[in-house]
Length: 95
Image (cartoon, rainbow, N blue to C red; front, side, top):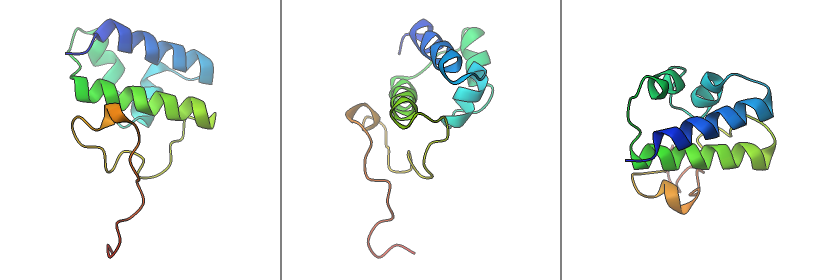
C-alpha cells in the first residue's frame, strides 16, 4: 500500500498552493470530500489510488487550476495511472 503520510502531505501542500482545504483537493481529484479525513483517521490508500491522486495533483499544478478537465481519469485503469494520463477523449465510434 502507498505511504498514507506522504499522500496526506501532498494534499496539504496542494491545498496551501491553491488556497483551498485539503478535502477540496481530494474531491476535485475524484476521491470525494472525505478522502483526506479518512486518511487522517488511519485508513489505507491503495497504490492505484495513490497513483491517480499523484497524477491529478501534477495536472492541477501544470494547469494552474484545481478544476481538472472532464474525463481526465476516465480511461485510467488499475496500474495505468502511474504511467501518466492516457487519452481521455471519446473513443472512435463511441456515442
